Length: 376
Image (cartoon, rainbow, N blue to C red):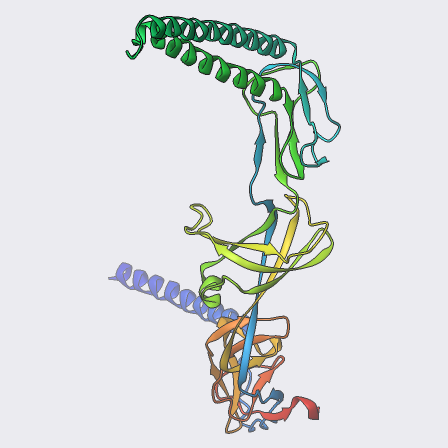
């Protein structure tokens, strides 16, 4: 009986030790835990409503200017292609990139010796054929006269009049006359010129080279240039039919008056942009060269019942703040476009005004004090 009693006392002692340790650990935990501040039930004093600057826009007719970037290009590029082949004897100083020339000016001279010989031979063959034709005609006339004396009142047979040989030689003479004209043309083609005043875009020929039927230069008629400007479909829709609209072009450091003459029939496959083509006003000298960068401004039609808002009124997602009954209200107007003066939108009920500038802690329903922009 003594052993069970001692064993029970042993377990009781260990239990007491465990309780003491647990109490110590709990005490340490609560000693290190953060203190919870006492709740202050003192009421917070309400903040004053912030002051905001507003503008009261006026509805009216507003037009936009479509601004585009493009380039000057030759309306028609003409390839200079000699009609005769041979060795180049001389090249005009005008026949180089950027060079200008006059109508009829010799730009290129090909060695004419071979073509002069061909012309001489063609003329000689023609002269010989003409001689044989005269001989046949003379024989026909002589034999016809003999026949009439011997056979008065009878018609001269064609064989006696030599009509067959005469017709053959007449055809031969006509063919040789064509050969002479062709040889003259080939000889004239050794002198290369253009029938108009022009400017050279690119040239690739030098004296001593042999040229064939391929082009040796590309030129354009002086003043025959236009502006090509890509345009987004949205801007094109705003302009409606842009043909005939006046425009202003800045190119080469100068300002030019221009007019839209046509638009591309299809969109560019990569950019999905259309293109407008503009002609410079008549009577303008010293037009920019092809390849010159150009800025284009085209005034568009006016929008009725529209607001012009300052850029400071713009918020995220093209929205604005308006003040309605002393509180902020978010509104998304219909954007019509932008100009240098500001943001053009369809007119709407602006309430006590459209807010411009930043508003601290802005949110719908925030109580504010609206002050007109001119009163601050």
